[in-house]
Image (cartoon, rainbow, N blue to C red; front, top):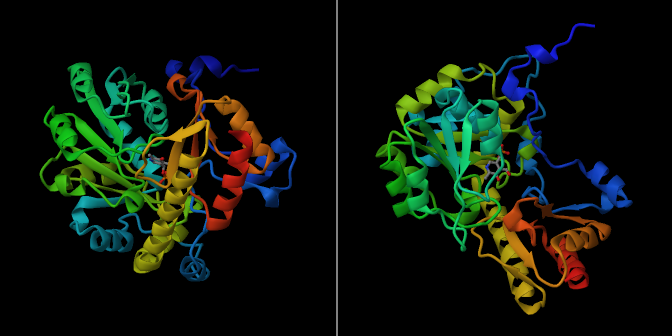
Length: 360
Ligand SMILES: Cc1ncc(COP(=O)(O)O)c(C=O)c1O
């Protein structure tokens, strides 16, 4: 039998698979409970679901036709929403695709890509696929970006720096002065604002000033359409032109494209739901302050990084899972005692608070 192993590119022979979230029926099977009893607070999804307006609008989409490779309608809608010219926005199949495209555009094998850990794992995953050297510069004790250490890590082969703002999983945002200091190094800085609609703060205005800045956004969280895979970026005209040139022609499927446009039309309603999730996060914070054995880090997102002191995070995770509540557990050495908990509906928060009392 012919062996393909020797034909696989050496750096991809043993790549660490990205561990995404399991579907609810699989979570239920693992915990020995019914799928309908699963509460998913492990992926920062929108627990209110896809909005009715979107569900209604996507019914009649002609699925036999290819989507527009130039993304004319969705880019026009994004331009209106962001206040940026249409030439400076582009849509991707989730923020994830934008991350991957940036790696393809800038990284040659052996080039260096920086992130500041702990952070979203997609940056290092995609950089490794591009055969780049990934350097993760540790964050400080309050999870702030260590600007001096990042600058030190910049070598002639360093091309890209990814910073999530708010950062997943720590919840803190990047101050403008830090972004400016890092942009001044000349690196391409990708500020990932996937949680922008929860934080309400953005560095997108800096894209007019810095050609080396890319802002990444998503419809997965605030708009409740993670399953459709649509996100976008804001950057200089030059950056957008390059990304448009290398993307797959039909990267945004017709359903996602229509859903994003409808979501933007109904943004008032969707932003109110995002606001309600921030309210549930704050309610959880208030309850956690009353509990022993658990603390949390301040968050600008729709999630909280919680630190357990009486029981191990693993025990707390399992205790919650037995009660049907799934949260995010980490193998990162600095997050061994921590779990990330997404904001849920008011009913889910009720159940979460009751369950937390049993596991702290
Ligand atoms: C910081 C960050 N960036 C990007 C993504 C991916 O977003 P999308 O669903 O748009 O690919 C996530 C998802 O959890 C995230 O936390």
